[in-house]
Amino acid sequence: MRAINDDAINEDVRPCLGVRRTILILEAIGERVAGMTNSEISRRLNIPKSTASYILRTLEQNRYISRDRSTGRYRLGLKLLALGRGVQIGREIREVARPVLRRLVERSGLTAHLAVLDHGEAVYIEKSEAAGFIKLDTWVGRRMDLHSTAVGKALAAFMQPFELESSIGERGLKQRTAKTLATRRELTAELRRVREAGYAVDDEENSVGVRCVAAPVFDAQARACAAVGLSGTTLQIDKSSIKSLRRLVVEASAEISGGLGYDLDMK
Image (cartoon, rainbow, N blue to C red; front, side, top):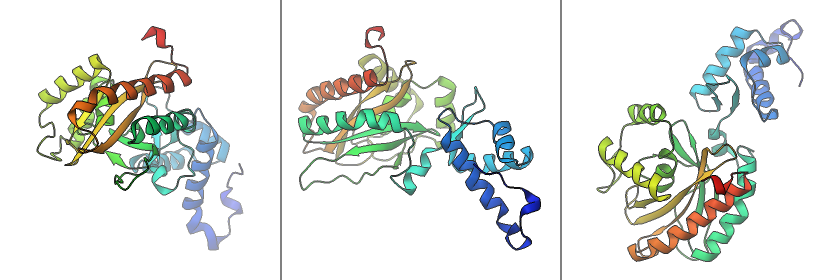
């Protein structure tokens, strides 16, 4: 990675310096799996720390990077997924999950998704679509509310209380349909049920005519790092089939978790 020396920049291209620095910062962060701190970025790219800090704050506010509060390290943000499938965010979990999602689709005949938590929202990072004429309006990079989706509730159930409260405080509980959870009391009770049962259901709570069943995925540190879900219309998923779909989803989430190093015996 070549640093930019201000003195070496021609006056004609100086207005582009901020853009070039932003690109270099994104590239530098992308090359480090563990992420980078402001100081590391400043030293590596020979950029003033104050300038790097300003660029990092702007990128974080716009969700192109995220900051680990405990370490101060920045990583690429999931919003980049919406710009192209080539972005390698969550590469390991996607590679582990991809064949599992395909088998889940084959066993269920429904569309499977893998979602992760990003800035208080659930984001699809992988999708395996079922064959047939019925196609769901979902895509990799789609962002969704936590309280109204099965994958969102599967993730929210294992969030730290202050993180969940911050998310609700910022976004509220938007009423997507007549069945959407409308109060914090309802959401708290629902998330408690999700933790105890090990799976979540969206019964036309996000979109009329659509049902979903999802389960959390755990990493080697026993953190709920993702959620795997099956989605379909109310004709494809009637209430009597939720029990069997729940079993398939929980089995798939356990397989992905095991592939990520989670010790299933410790659950």
